[in-house]
Length: 242
Image (cartoon, rainbow, N blue to C red):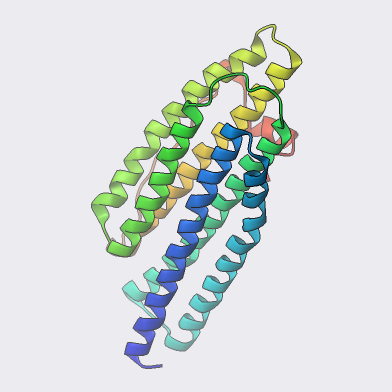
């Protein structure tokens, strides 16, 4: 394979990565919209598209491994291919979390929503923007944009903590079984959005390593657990931590 052919192959793979990123970004948007509007057709559409996201990951990985085998890249070229391999994993997980949200929409069903859903869609828009900007930073090798994505993670964590306080209040109060159960489901939605932001931050950090060759030190400790409630353990117990 000539150097020119290799460059074209790598550019083509990066184009496919962007398509995958665009699809998962749409998945986030549609999943949260399906929840806000209780639109079950949209929720099912998100779930049906998951196989497409998974196949895109497989195709990109196979093309990357073929390039490594044929070209034996070193230095920055190797870091680029390794970054692509890791980014596809983050994107696939983001797609999974969008599906988790769609599944929660179907679980809530036609129950009247216990609160106006303005904060969850706002949080979703922030995470969508982080995903989009992290991929733009990859294509443009833009370290400043990658760093901006990293800085965006903390505000999302703060949004999650605020939602946590509000929603756990429904559970701790003497509320109806309907209110408490739905509050837990909405809490899971917020947690999935917070995880999506973490994956976008991972992508930004991979971009920084790809460009500089230096690993980025990060101190993400994740959101707190007010009232002593461990949401991740609760998710595992309910089968939501897939």
